[in-house]
Length: 308
Figure 1 (cartoon, rainbow, N blue to C red):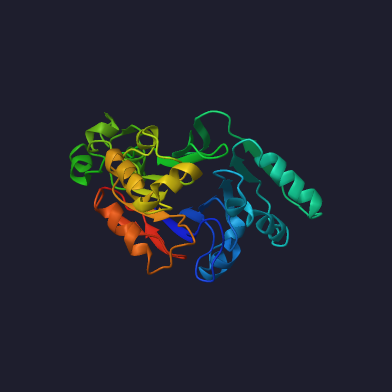
Figure 2 (figure 1 turned 90 degrees about the vertical axis):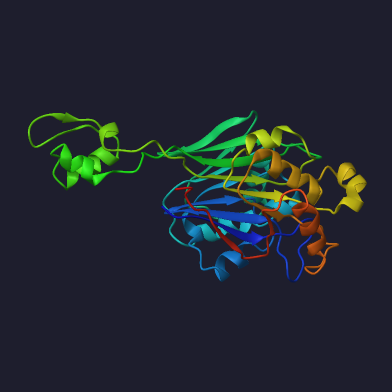
């Protein structure tokens, strides 16, 4: 099952000609999940030819303008493409007011169901048959949350030779064993899944953290993520500014990635004071702490692979 993260925008505070505001789309087979929606979100969706009308849910970190101003346009456009499924929107308190006031002021024509759920405490907020999305608190100038999508463990590797030895014929019965169901063999004995499967295998984990001060609890929440997309808004010379504005430096983001034992961290939400050329400073400072750090750019794609 494919899992990919598309960076629709990597900028913070204000859009630049070469950098849209922060937004990330996670595609998991037929499911699409949008994390924040700053200005330029629709442009990148179109350039990447993503089926944005199939977005299942939008997860908003907080209601500062550079994270939400791209959402009203998406809501209006979705009414023009015969959307049937409900759209879920999650975020901290005030997200419901923002969505409702946008609909009223812009006189939106909406012909599908929008379900808005405000997050008031950490925990699982959205689930599919084999994954959960968990929200956790961050520390910004207004209420802000981070998110992790965590897949459930997968069955172990299937060993056809063992199934044959136990007289289970190739076909639908093998699929049932692989899905964790017991079956009856050709000679009438019951065969349990653990007789033909290896140890249970880990699912994948994606985490999204932006607009926060460094707090140790973040590392606990994003622990062992296959991909952590994390803000690194300033270099270390501006640590005082970062503290005042309740943002992180790239070095602080790397500290979280290191302590959380993530596989890869992708920096996002850069201050507009940095040109693309200047971003090498953020990368250098982060890699000094956590070597598996990369810079995001608009419309970059990150495949997230299984460990085994």
